[in-house]
Figure 1 (cartoon, rainbow, N blue to C red):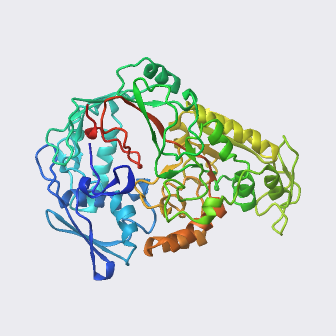
Figure 2 (cartoon, rainbow, N blue to C red):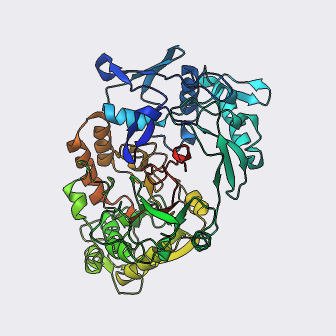
Figure 3 (tube, rainbow, N blue to C red):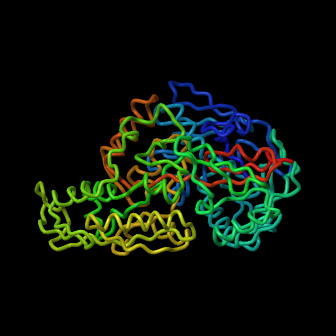
Amino acid sequence: MFRPLYWFGNDGKAEVNDSLSLAAAPVYSNGGKTVTIKLKPYNWSNGTAVTSADVMFWFNMAKAEKTNYAAYVPGQFPDNIVSATAPDAKTIVFNTDKAYSQQWFLSNQLGQITPMPAAWDMTAANTKGTCASSESGCAAVYKYLIAQSKDLPTYATNPLWQVVDGPWSLKSFNSDGHITFVPNTKYSGPVKPTLKEFIEVPFTTDSAEFNVLRGASTIDVGYLPTQDLSSPRPANTSPGQAGPNPLSANYTLAPWNLYGINYFPINFNNPTVGPIFKQLYFRQALQSTVDQKGILTSAAKNYGFETTGPVPLFPDSPLISATEKSNPYPFNIDAAKKYLTDNGWTVASGTAATCSKPGTAAGDCGAGVTAGQKLSFNLQYASGTQTITTAMQSLKSNAAQAGIILNISPAPFNTVTGTAIPCSGKTCTWEMGNWGGGWVYAPDYYPTGETLFQTGAGSNSGSYSNAAMDKLISDSTTQSGTAVMQAYENALAKDVPVIWQPNYTYSLTEVANGLKGATTQNPYSAINPEDWHY
């Protein structure tokens, strides 16, 4: 319904799509510190033009409410903008505090912007706001919009949400996931919908969805649960290739791999176990108990690829370093035990290891770890997907052999993501949380990691902090090329800021035979049903 300034994902490739972007490519001047953007002729569904004021509306809101924005990174957008102006209705000019890598600035700074309609610049139902023209007017507008957004039953009727610039508008909405979209007849983009409606149909379990698909239902595009594959993907094929399809009579199988990484965060700020997590040797030990290849082979039936650092290993890219390709911490129970015994822990398989040598000298348990403290932790994971459940059971079993006891418990996805968040103080008590999907690089489309791993970043869920890593991340934002990226990538892969997990194929998409345009899928997880047709 709402299109970003720059659209990413081009015919299935992880790159910017100029034809679907609302603006032309940015032009850099003044030594790279002045960025000029020209808008294309797009309109909102109420007939008004998408203008530079709509971009300034978003920008002012981002400045005023940056601490409420998950993609916010201290010192970066919008902090790094010295001035922002709209000299005319189709032009925006940003002046930055220094010159940045142009690839990074387009992908990870300008790529965040989604113009907001003037219809949203309200402080009450009949009271106009001033956020589009002034940052000082944004707090009241934000308060009103957030209050309106919490009223789910009115999503399809509230006039606020009916003004769109994308190819679809909302016809009906139910908080259980039943959603119907219809074409935006005023859409001014290059690809207009031909379907009468686009309907999202939720299922509470993957087995329920499989039963409907197996019955040759009216579902045009569905998702095959991994456990219902008749055979795994052949080991000598690419993650993008499909194996045998049990629903081939009615559907074409199209694996959907996202440009991202899979991991689960650990809470460095937990007052009790945080000091243990801050010890590199412990993170090395726990990572060494993750049998990524085994999980991919058994639970995922060869659909997916390993995660060994911040740069995805698929698709192949010059950014991928030899360090990531070789995996610094392959599955090795004996190595996991040695990391612990070399650093003051008494390890017995099947029971929680005990700190028997507290202190900060070489070979001691480390700062903040007390005598007799045990390696026993609570790990909450997202329920409802058998692959994730199997992976967590595997990790629990393997970690126990190295003296690390994981008390795993399933919970709804929203519960896990709502619990495993940055925090501090006595109430910051969560320990480990696995929502099952890690991170897709969007809206940080270039994998420099500032959104995830820089100190204080909004999506740095475990509050990981490393000054040397902050410097390497900063370098990757100001310098172009693979060398600076690989320096950061290698250091982070070895420092284990999170526990890397297999990057499962996002979905085994089943496309009804005869439906065109749905088998090429966006690597950043966007769905484009305007491309679909029979």
